[in-house]
Amino acid sequence: MTDRKNQVDKTEEKGKRDRQYRVWPLPLVIAIDILLVGVGLVVFALFHHVLPRDVGIAGLALPSMTTERTMESASPSPSATTDPLSGQTEPSFVFPSLSPGATPTTAATTTQPTAPLAEGLFAEKFRDKFTAGEVEKTDTSYKSAHVNVSVEKVSTGKVAYTVIDIYVIDPAYLRTAFAAGKYARGVSATVLEMATDNQAIAAISGDYYGIRDRGIVIRNGVLYREKLYRDVLIMNHDGSMATFTAAEFDIKTVLEQGAWQGWSFGPMLLKDGQPMTSFNSDVNVANPRGAIGYYEPGHYCFVLVDGRQPGYSNGMTTRQLSQLFYDLGCKVAYNLDGGQSAVVTFMDSVANKPYKGGREISDIIYVADGLPED
Image 1: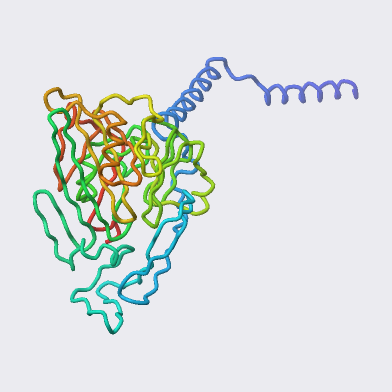
Image 2 (image 1 turned 180 degrees about the horizontal axis):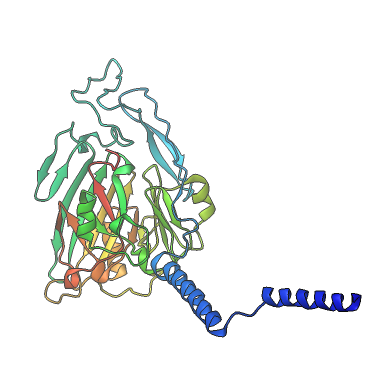
């Protein structure tokens, strides 16, 4: 009896194990495998084609370097500061920090200003460039308490270009914007659409970051991508600009000390303020081109060269564009996305004649008379 009972127990135990590890029907297994593969492909497509591949750092707010402002007199006092990225020593100015509507304290021998200054790093430095609050507009200029923008069009018979001269009371008024307000792959809009969405006084096509998975992307003090791609342009929180080759660029410095803007397209167009004859670019022949120039902190320009339009404008080579920025007096210049992308706007209108009417891109650089938090 004992042997028979043991045999029954073993048979029941084996039956339980068989039921526990019973193999699922083959069609069900295949269906589950197909479902899992499909989910995997959807996730891959989302991250590979829609979102930039560097989403792990996207949205990292960089530190903002503050500038101490003290008042010793109504006039700014020059001092020497070292750009934390370029390592170059440049003259700078120390200004007071003024609350809205406040007037600066002046020495006894200084005439009291008749109008209050708006807040801004360059309020005193470019005092004559801004108004006391009113807006002055013409077909080719815009002047307010925060920005001063003027447009000049030049045509030589073989090339036509537009220069937008820009003064800002503070670096915060020279901004960047993404299409649809999103940092993402596959999202695009026209330069004019992005300009009007952000109430831009003037705007120019950016570096079209959305067609690459490499290249520094720093926008309005936020780091979105740190992978290098050729030459880099950095705008610091003090309004200074500097260009770097990929070999010269130090991402560690940016992460530690911050930057206001960072672009990756290029090439750089000036070296130590001098025109160049060779460039880190594969496209150096005459083309429509967009570029940004830097005179000194607070003073910049957009240059838009029309091209590929015989009888109107052939475009410029990189060497010709380099010479143009040198002739304008810029210390730094940087080539942005060009060709059909090259578009510049002024006061809600396209200010140039884009090749084939332009095209949708992923980002712009623009000047605004107000800040998003206003």
